[in-house]
Image (cartoon, rainbow, N blue to C red; front, side, top):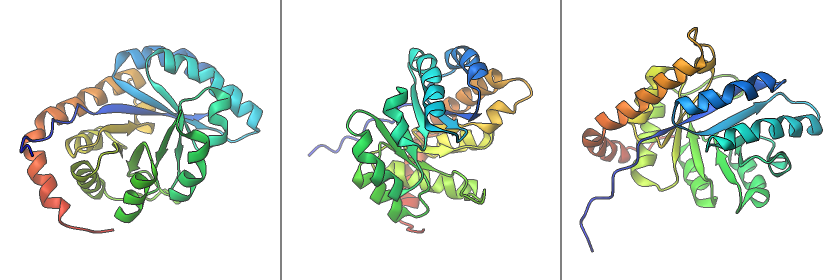
Length: 234
Protein backbone atom coordinates (compact mmCIF):
# COMPACT_ATOMS: atom_id res chain seq x y z
CA UNK A 1 0.00 0.00 0.00
CA UNK A 2 1.12 3.52 -0.70
CA UNK A 3 2.12 5.82 2.11
CA UNK A 4 1.48 8.88 -0.02
CA UNK A 5 -0.51 11.50 1.87
CA UNK A 6 -4.05 12.14 0.66
CA UNK A 7 -4.42 14.97 -1.85
CA UNK A 8 -5.03 18.36 -0.25
CA UNK A 9 -8.64 19.41 0.11
CA UNK A 10 -9.78 21.98 -2.42
CA UNK A 11 -10.37 25.51 -1.20
CA UNK A 12 -13.68 25.89 0.63
CA UNK A 13 -16.58 27.53 -1.16
CA UNK A 14 -19.43 29.73 0.00
CA UNK A 15 -22.96 28.52 0.67
CA UNK A 16 -25.24 31.58 0.73
CA UNK A 17 -28.42 31.52 2.80
CA UNK A 18 -31.12 33.94 1.65
CA UNK A 19 -33.19 36.09 3.94
CA UNK A 20 -36.61 34.61 4.62
CA UNK A 21 -38.30 35.07 1.25
CA UNK A 22 -41.84 36.35 0.93
CA UNK A 23 -41.77 38.30 -2.34
CA UNK A 24 -38.82 36.96 -4.38
CA UNK A 25 -38.73 39.78 -6.96
CA UNK A 26 -35.94 41.82 -5.35
CA UNK A 27 -33.81 38.75 -4.74
CA UNK A 28 -34.29 37.52 -8.31
CA UNK A 29 -32.94 40.87 -9.52
CA UNK A 30 -30.03 40.92 -7.07
CA UNK A 31 -28.76 37.35 -7.26
CA UNK A 32 -27.01 37.35 -10.67
CA UNK A 33 -24.58 40.11 -9.69
CA UNK A 34 -23.99 38.55 -6.26
CA UNK A 35 -23.27 35.10 -7.63
CA UNK A 36 -20.96 36.52 -10.28
CA UNK A 37 -18.93 38.38 -7.65
CA UNK A 38 -17.84 35.44 -5.48
CA UNK A 39 -17.34 31.69 -5.56
CA UNK A 40 -20.77 30.56 -4.37
CA UNK A 41 -21.40 26.82 -4.67
CA UNK A 42 -24.99 26.82 -3.49
CA UNK A 43 -27.83 29.00 -2.29
CA UNK A 44 -30.06 27.98 0.63
CA UNK A 45 -33.57 29.29 0.07
CA UNK A 46 -35.33 30.14 3.29
CA UNK A 47 -39.03 30.40 2.51
CA UNK A 48 -41.70 32.17 4.47
CA UNK A 49 -44.25 29.48 5.24
CA UNK A 50 -47.50 29.80 3.34
CA UNK A 51 -49.54 27.55 1.03
CA UNK A 52 -47.62 25.04 -1.06
CA UNK A 53 -48.57 26.52 -4.41
CA UNK A 54 -47.17 29.92 -3.44
CA UNK A 55 -43.96 28.42 -2.10
CA UNK A 56 -43.48 26.38 -5.28
CA UNK A 57 -43.94 29.56 -7.32
CA UNK A 58 -41.22 31.26 -5.27
CA UNK A 59 -38.83 28.35 -5.77
CA UNK A 60 -39.53 28.45 -9.52
CA UNK A 61 -38.70 32.16 -9.60
CA UNK A 62 -35.36 31.75 -7.83
CA UNK A 63 -34.08 28.50 -9.32
CA UNK A 64 -33.16 29.88 -12.79
CA UNK A 65 -30.86 32.76 -11.70
CA UNK A 66 -29.10 30.51 -9.20
CA UNK A 67 -28.65 27.60 -11.58
CA UNK A 68 -27.64 29.83 -14.47
CA UNK A 69 -24.77 31.08 -12.29
CA UNK A 70 -23.58 27.49 -11.83
CA UNK A 71 -24.76 27.19 -8.24
CA UNK A 72 -27.22 24.74 -6.71
CA UNK A 73 -30.50 25.89 -5.16
CA UNK A 74 -31.46 24.07 -1.97
CA UNK A 75 -34.69 24.61 -0.10
CA UNK A 76 -34.49 24.93 3.69
CA UNK A 77 -36.93 22.19 4.67
CA UNK A 78 -39.95 21.28 2.51
CA UNK A 79 -38.33 18.38 0.61
CA UNK A 80 -41.70 17.63 -0.95
CA UNK A 81 -41.49 20.92 -2.87
CA UNK A 82 -37.99 20.46 -4.29
CA UNK A 83 -38.81 18.58 -7.48
CA UNK A 84 -42.01 20.52 -8.11
CA UNK A 85 -40.15 23.83 -7.85
CA UNK A 86 -37.15 22.78 -9.91
CA UNK A 87 -34.67 23.09 -7.02
CA UNK A 88 -31.55 20.98 -6.70
CA UNK A 89 -32.13 19.64 -3.22
CA UNK A 90 -33.16 20.29 0.35
CA UNK A 91 -31.55 21.01 3.70
CA UNK A 92 -33.07 18.89 6.45
CA UNK A 93 -33.18 19.70 10.18
CA UNK A 94 -31.92 16.49 11.77
CA UNK A 95 -31.62 12.74 11.34
CA UNK A 96 -35.36 11.98 11.39
CA UNK A 97 -36.11 14.56 8.69
CA UNK A 98 -33.19 13.30 6.62
CA UNK A 99 -34.37 9.69 6.77
CA UNK A 100 -37.89 10.71 5.81
CA UNK A 101 -36.76 12.84 2.87
CA UNK A 102 -34.08 10.61 1.37
CA UNK A 103 -36.40 8.41 -0.72
CA UNK A 104 -37.92 11.46 -2.44
CA UNK A 105 -34.60 13.24 -3.02
CA UNK A 106 -32.21 10.46 -3.98
CA UNK A 107 -30.55 9.78 -6.32
CA UNK A 108 -31.17 12.92 -8.37
CA UNK A 109 -31.17 15.64 -5.74
CA UNK A 110 -29.05 16.85 -2.86
CA UNK A 111 -29.94 15.95 0.73
CA UNK A 112 -28.05 18.04 3.27
CA UNK A 113 -28.57 17.89 7.00
CA UNK A 114 -28.04 20.02 10.09
CA UNK A 115 -29.28 19.90 13.67
CA UNK A 116 -26.59 17.35 14.55
CA UNK A 117 -25.95 17.85 18.24
CA UNK A 118 -23.55 14.94 18.82
CA UNK A 119 -20.74 13.19 17.01
CA UNK A 120 -22.84 10.03 17.00
CA UNK A 121 -25.65 11.81 15.14
CA UNK A 122 -23.11 13.17 12.67
CA UNK A 123 -21.73 9.72 11.92
CA UNK A 124 -25.27 8.36 11.53
CA UNK A 125 -26.08 11.11 9.02
CA UNK A 126 -22.98 10.30 6.99
CA UNK A 127 -23.74 6.60 7.00
CA UNK A 128 -27.33 6.92 5.79
CA UNK A 129 -26.38 9.11 2.85
CA UNK A 130 -26.32 12.83 3.67
CA UNK A 131 -24.59 14.78 0.91
CA UNK A 132 -23.21 17.27 3.42
CA UNK A 133 -23.35 17.95 7.15
CA UNK A 134 -23.87 21.45 8.56
CA UNK A 135 -22.36 22.28 11.94
CA UNK A 136 -23.11 25.34 14.03
CA UNK A 137 -26.58 26.52 13.09
CA UNK A 138 -28.85 27.88 15.86
CA UNK A 139 -31.41 25.55 17.42
CA UNK A 140 -35.11 26.32 17.80
CA UNK A 141 -34.32 28.62 20.75
CA UNK A 142 -31.63 30.48 18.80
CA UNK A 143 -28.81 28.87 20.78
CA UNK A 144 -25.70 27.56 19.09
CA UNK A 145 -22.36 26.08 20.16
CA UNK A 146 -19.36 28.33 20.68
CA UNK A 147 -17.30 29.15 17.60
CA UNK A 148 -14.46 27.08 19.10
CA UNK A 149 -16.73 24.04 19.51
CA UNK A 150 -17.96 24.38 15.93
CA UNK A 151 -14.40 24.65 14.65
CA UNK A 152 -13.43 21.53 16.62
CA UNK A 153 -16.35 19.57 15.17
CA UNK A 154 -15.43 20.63 11.63
CA UNK A 155 -11.81 19.72 12.26
CA UNK A 156 -12.78 16.27 13.55
CA UNK A 157 -15.13 15.56 10.67
CA UNK A 158 -12.79 16.80 7.94
CA UNK A 159 -9.97 14.63 9.27
CA UNK A 160 -11.90 11.37 9.50
CA UNK A 161 -14.86 11.34 7.12
CA UNK A 162 -15.58 11.69 3.42
CA UNK A 163 -18.91 13.60 3.07
CA UNK A 164 -18.39 17.37 2.92
CA UNK A 165 -18.85 19.45 6.05
CA UNK A 166 -20.26 22.97 6.22
CA UNK A 167 -19.62 25.55 8.92
CA UNK A 168 -22.44 27.96 9.79
CA UNK A 169 -20.71 31.34 10.14
CA UNK A 170 -22.36 34.34 11.75
CA UNK A 171 -19.43 36.70 11.13
CA UNK A 172 -16.43 37.19 8.87
CA UNK A 173 -14.18 35.97 11.69
CA UNK A 174 -16.12 32.73 12.00
CA UNK A 175 -16.02 32.24 8.23
CA UNK A 176 -12.22 32.47 8.37
CA UNK A 177 -11.93 30.18 11.39
CA UNK A 178 -14.23 27.51 9.98
CA UNK A 179 -12.40 27.46 6.66
CA UNK A 180 -9.13 27.09 8.55
CA UNK A 181 -10.64 24.18 10.50
CA UNK A 182 -11.33 22.14 7.38
CA UNK A 183 -14.84 23.11 6.31
CA UNK A 184 -15.54 22.23 2.69
CA UNK A 185 -18.18 24.96 2.54
CA UNK A 186 -18.94 27.96 4.74
CA UNK A 187 -22.57 28.97 5.06
CA UNK A 188 -23.08 32.72 5.31
CA UNK A 189 -26.35 34.56 5.55
CA UNK A 190 -27.64 37.23 7.88
CA UNK A 191 -24.36 39.10 8.33
CA UNK A 192 -23.98 39.29 4.55
CA UNK A 193 -27.42 40.83 4.02
CA UNK A 194 -27.05 43.19 6.99
CA UNK A 195 -23.70 44.64 5.90
CA UNK A 196 -24.04 48.44 5.49
CA UNK A 197 -21.83 48.27 2.39
CA UNK A 198 -24.33 45.93 0.75
CA UNK A 199 -24.30 42.15 0.35
CA UNK A 200 -21.98 42.13 -2.67
CA UNK A 201 -19.08 43.72 -0.79
CA UNK A 202 -19.68 41.45 2.19
CA UNK A 203 -19.81 38.33 0.04
CA UNK A 204 -16.58 39.21 -1.79
CA UNK A 205 -14.90 39.77 1.57
CA UNK A 206 -16.16 36.44 2.94
CA UNK A 207 -14.97 34.63 -0.17
CA UNK A 208 -11.51 36.16 0.18
CA UNK A 209 -11.40 35.29 3.89
CA UNK A 210 -12.13 31.60 3.45
CA UNK A 211 -9.64 31.28 0.59
CA UNK A 212 -6.99 33.03 2.69
CA UNK A 213 -7.72 30.76 5.66
CA UNK A 214 -7.43 27.67 3.51
CA UNK A 215 -4.14 28.82 2.02
CA UNK A 216 -2.69 29.50 5.46
CA UNK A 217 -3.98 26.36 7.15
CA UNK A 218 -2.76 23.15 5.50
CA UNK A 219 0.54 22.65 7.27
CA UNK A 220 -0.86 23.18 10.75
CA UNK A 221 -4.30 21.74 10.04
CA UNK A 222 -3.15 18.13 9.69
CA UNK A 223 -1.46 17.98 13.09
CA UNK A 224 -4.25 19.93 14.77
CA UNK A 225 -6.81 17.57 13.27
CA UNK A 226 -4.96 14.52 14.53
CA UNK A 227 -4.71 16.02 18.01
CA UNK A 228 -8.42 16.74 18.20
CA UNK A 229 -9.54 13.49 16.56
CA UNK A 230 -8.57 11.54 19.66
CA UNK A 231 -10.85 13.52 21.97
CA UNK A 232 -14.42 12.24 21.69
CA UNK A 233 -17.15 14.46 23.00
CA UNK A 234 -20.79 15.24 22.39
